[in-house]
Length: 418
Ligand SMILES: [Fe+2]
Ligand SMILES: [Fe+2]
Picture 1 (cartoon, rainbow, N blue to C red):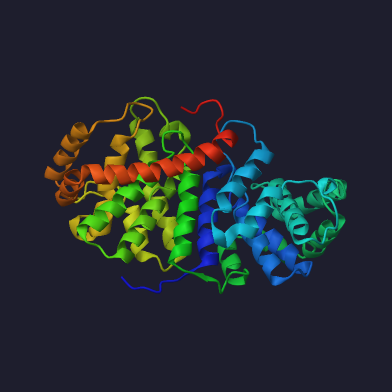
Picture 2: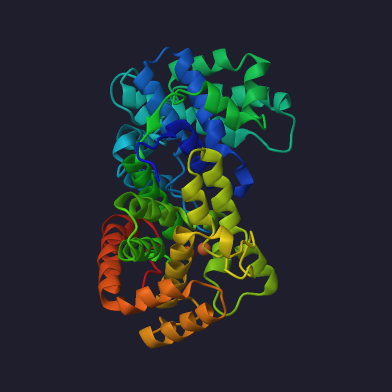
């Protein structure tokens, strides 16, 4: 594995943003569209390069604190706070985090000039978000424009600053603006014309993005709060004990942090179901590693991570899902993450059963090894070093739990935490 690896930040953010959009199915491409409107508006208002970059990043992630798939009515204040808490942990995205925090604040609640970077950035995203929310996905776009303008004029000054509304009028006069906004090619428009076209990130920065999305996925359900942390910690330990290089172990940890990314689109009613899944429900679950693969592979330059992350339900005999890989397709990293995922899942309390003990899990995993589902040498490595591996997993899971309890819990599901 080579050092000096780089990934384009724009492509990475667009892909991850799209994965959150996929989870909120009734407003397809919402964050991408918000980013397009905000970007055009920021350019029209002649903002400086750094401010434009931050607006672009914040709009792509502005819904990251939204309770995905929740029946509860939306509390925008909490949603913005959660968004900030998630995003501010990635050093690269710190300035965007503040904008996410304030992107729902009405103009009348801001003090001082509109020209402060945080004020104008937040107002731009408020308008962009609002415009996209007004657009019906089933009607021809130009037939909706008059109505959108009418609404904006009505809301000028109290809700939105007039300079921002003025800029929007200017950009939205061209039909081209509306056609680009609703185009199926919006992703590539943003990739090629967006401000992050030349921004490359290194492995450490990618790792912190993995940490961010691990939380977005796992905090979706109370049964998975520390799941990915466990899989990642277990994989790192197995990689180390097996003799992988430091770099390989690091990449393995990152891949594990992304492994269940596709679960964003599996409804909680299935993830938290008490009792066995029906065949139809299980068929929906089967799509999650496919989406993990789709999202990560569209980033480009992550081939190793894509495979290690998305092959975690594959089996050596070809009986896994969704790719039906066989032994020759599954290298060390993929085998380690598959073993770790099975192990961690059995250690967890589920909606339909309690945690399992060491011996019970060992029996199940030995049987899976004998049946050529998973690689026996990693099962043996795991149980030969059981205590040190479990200690390491617990330390890591405790840290995730602390973050959840200290910051996220009060803004999340106040009544049903166990
Ligand atoms: Fe999975
Ligand atoms: Fe998993």
